[in-house]
Image (tube, rainbow, N blue to C red; front, side, top):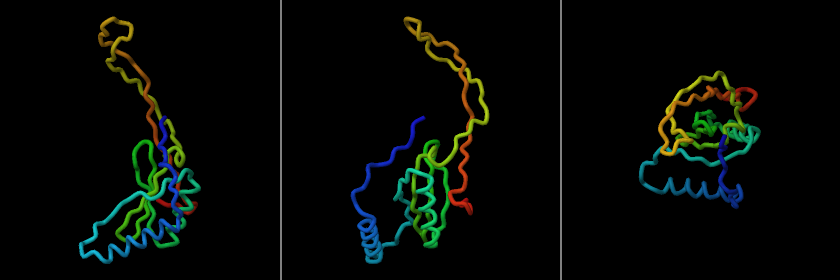
Length: 143
């Protein structure tokens, strides 16, 4: 199973990033155009504990915190702060447990690897049916 990889580490400090956001906020105040509701990803935590720390900090600041599906490989925590939605992406298998709930036999036509000019042959394979069990990030339960 391929895992989501995080981008290379940023060499900026948290203080430098916070200062850049303050300058961006000043720019939004100065521009006489309607602001558009924004979504962007700001964090790529590696562990469930890092996501929990982020969720707790956001809740202390009055943000709404939601878990959202983001595909088979990615877990997304969304912090809603006024009109902004700021995301944290993590590898889903670092946060959730992949549980095989059943299997099924699938028959498909595939090229015969032993034939000179491969004809199509039927092949049956077992396919797993899975669920992702993603418990609450915080003990109190973030839905």
